[in-house]
Image 1: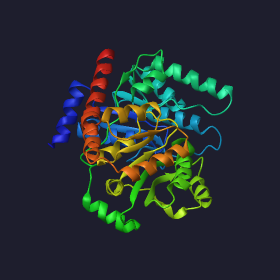
Image 2: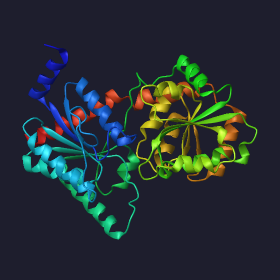
Image 3: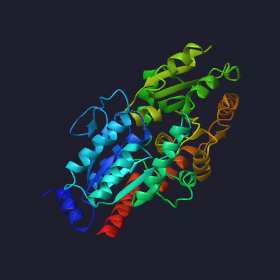
Image 4: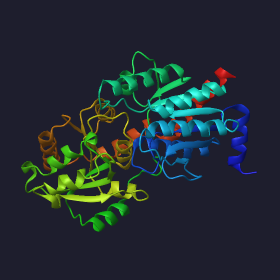
Length: 382
């Protein structure tokens, strides 16, 4: 009998052997929640816990994809299909783990309670709710019902926990695979040659291409006259947001210096190499919970240049590495980029950046914390 099979059978005897995990976003898309679910599922499997996933996307036995066909009310369709799958699979899992205040999450938690199974809610961020008062009210109702119904609620950072007060939340900060995300000198040479980067300093952005990620602010900064004559490149990794598919193309078409920008696109298997090709990671987001791309870049050794939102400030202060600028201020961002090129990057910063992630954000330790939470809520209902 294989070691993983033995571990799974042991888990069935003493705790959660299978968990039903939901995601309101496709796992194939560049979203922090989708990546969180993918990584969590993979490392749960290594610990002997099987994951069944329900998420929107192409239907596949391996990814739990739900094909959404309704032109109106896609969130309702996702919630109903998730509930149907949950009920059909009720004899195969012991716990439900949902993500974010979302109709899918609420439906899954309510069904879990009806089935007599515990549920865990992970809160990744509290984003501003677009739309009118009715939509905002609906989101508030879903949030409150979820927090009252789930057996355990977890926030990915102290800041996220603060935004959901007065509820008391357990904190399990996000983690990354530090064995996979590490600096590669060979990868740096290979990618910089591929992208045509010589001795210039390379600033790197990785994530969803949207205004909420501050990409418009970053592109304006990169085009600033403050940076005229300075040798640098800005590498853009990621993919367009469905809500803003033309953001990058539109912004670049307006730039006076488009050659400063290298659009690398979506990078998957070579992400550590591409991060290694950079010198500074730029994180200009207007809000975040605990950004995985930020942690991955630091694990590779890139110091962050980040907007001064709470979680960025916490990570920079915790590591003693990086620079902060006022959120949304492209002029200050450009001036900081110029200052970095003028003064250089302290030689100890790459090692200190990685050491912080190894100490505080190694994914294996975070998965152990989730398993502990699973076992506690399962024991409470046994």
